[in-house]
Length: 443
Ligand code: NAD
Image 1 (cartoon, helix red, strand yellow):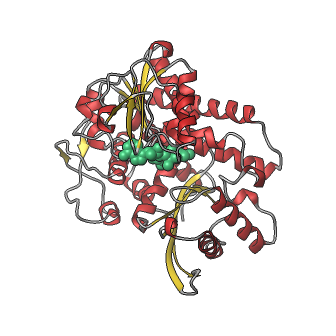
Image 2: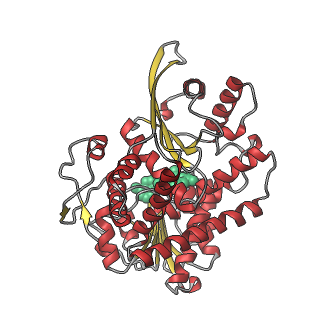
Image 3: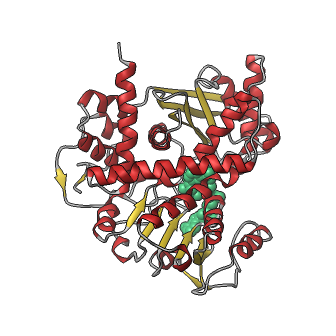
């Protein structure tokens, strides 16, 4: 698979991708930027699909992008202005869906790219949503609960004609949580004069959140790993795995894979990595972190190794579930796992893809492997609209079915087009969004 690289890394994201698609194949080089990596794969998939230029141009740019400046009274009485964005990349398949990020790193270009990512993720698992993302440039760690509440309500007020259960449905992302979603739901409901729980997902259960949402992403990672192990004829009970990251996604993926018989020989978090060739008792590790401020620091049931060493362990399955750009052109040739299941968003750079593919390593891409979370967010929205709540067992059964079907569709596409699972997932997603766009027509 050829890598199509940009001629200049210095220009910003929008400038790069507002021009025509890449023409010249270039030597493999690592872009080391998840957003660049995403657009490179998008471009490669559209070439294979033979997508016409006008549809390509329409899909690479967002449908709508709204920027607001929010005045918020701080606890000390001063008034501070915060810049916020909401980008609707596509609403072809249904109302747009995507998280809201509170971080000092938020930029409009980043939000645009993350919104596109949501479009592909929703399309690949076949849920009736388009893609969106929102963000406010702020540092939530230095703000009081009152300041965060006023900021969230001001943002919701500004976006009251963007958000809506049938228009655009936010969710938590970096720096936001179920409490933030509760404020959005309350403010939106007051503005519209109706109770409107379906305007956001990821709410606390008592306010209409869904059973199973907290575990949903890790559960989807486990289901994807099981599906892939079936194709590779790997016996879970005779397989080992290493999991990078021990937060929501990493710890639950590890726990559920262990329940499937896989021996988890290494886990890690920001404090370092812990290796035990006989297997780590994952419930024991979860109990440890819950009494230890959420970290594995001081965990003694494994030898301490570095996070880099964890990635290169001689295991059958590797689950990166922490950060972007962990597997790159630099370390990809030292990866020994036969299967990589991407719990995190963007853990593998595009420069690593070909190296892993040539080595015969199957990679289940983020837009498929971690889509269990958005699938159960969709169930939350369905339950809110029905006013009827499902048991956790029903949520899990239906989410598992979505994940298995999506895996099989992507696997068949990878056979048909003779591409790896990542490009196959982009092909499935782009084909679906492009054909819907054509059917809906244009002015
Ligand atoms: P989290 O904050 O709960 O956990 C992150 C974990 O990564 C923590 O254990 C942290 O210590 C660890 N970590 C941080 N830096 C590290 C480092 N340098 N080396 C090793 N570990 C490190 O976050 P999460 O919700 O589990 O999300 C993890 C990834 O999964 C992110 O990429 C996120 O975008 C993606 N994701 C999450 C969801 C979801 O529903 N939570 C859904 C889709 C994708």
